[in-house]
Length: 212
Length: 109
Image (tube, rainbow over all chains, first blue to last red; front, side):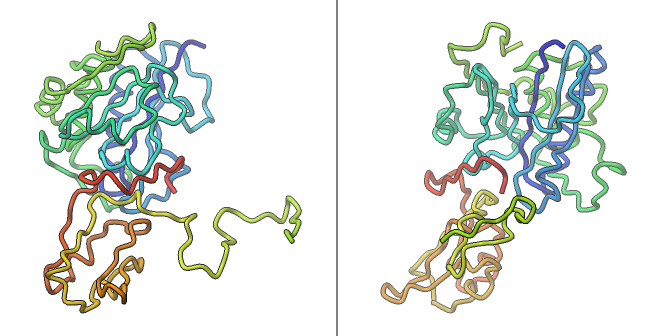
């Protein structure tokens, strides 16, 4: 079994649930279109989610077939995406991250300010911020409980689109052309791709060259 | 003396809590908050509407200083107090503007 890249997406329950699910689903679907083996799922531990409670969504991407089917938590996330920036104050988001991991935050604040709230940031290989709220400004609150099954807004309509664009640029794991076939708000994805701010740290692992 | 509980009789997290105490620190919910209510003591009329409206009893009155006190540990940022305040003494400020109030739990709750 080859190296599996684990992606954990942190979000707030109900109010930003759909965005995080779109990030995990669309990113792994784009990787699947490029011939990778993927898994994407919600967390069962955090459910049922309530308004504003921190919840997780997971994605796994690998060049070879993924054999761990029944483990539904990412214990060693290589990429952590934070859909709502206040989460860094309440949760140890880098728990279990191996050296040289990547953190992507949706915020308009400077990177140095965000690093104040992450005391264990020395494991990071790179940190990136994207102002997805400012770019799309749409929060698609879904109270239907359908979990996206009858979603009329489409995948990647709200703040998920700029975050996906930033993830594409920073991880370099999928092409944005593949993402553009899946998500509905392609213009916001392009803006997220162009406007992401990255700060790299020296001790990035050799096998991960974050930055495409 | 601690009572020995056999493995098969153990109960899940939260079923037994140390009581009676005023606040259960096991159930800290301050990481639910995106905005925080900030009180202007000049405008506050001590009408106790926030005390009545808060679902989590996060507002209390300090009798010595004659002002309302906010409990950061259990406020979920629902903004009901801000909405209900008749004197407009409360305002919603983004939580990231403050450097205090960091809890950093290992799991969501």
